[in-house]
Image (tube, rainbow, N blue to C red):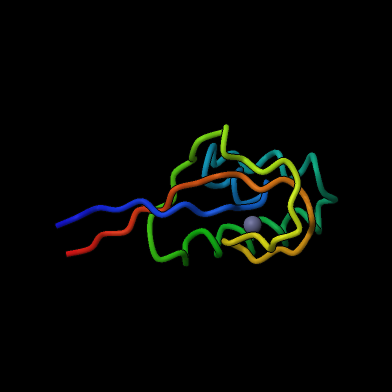
Length: 90
Ligand SMILES: [Zn+2]
């Protein structure tokens, strides 16, 4: 069995869920309604990825990108954080 790590670039919201799992920061960034919507969307997106996600190398982070988040698909331009997705091959 081979375990491979595939780099993925995700938005700050997804990174919060992947990295710390501390969702209280959503309440800080968004209004209560918006916060609940984002938390639901992002936690579902992270859970539906085909492999387990780890926080990657901060040196690989993109300070600013218009590329959609590879996890939740958010097209909001901004920072993209480097993460690694575990993929188990044969
Ligand atoms: Zn995202």
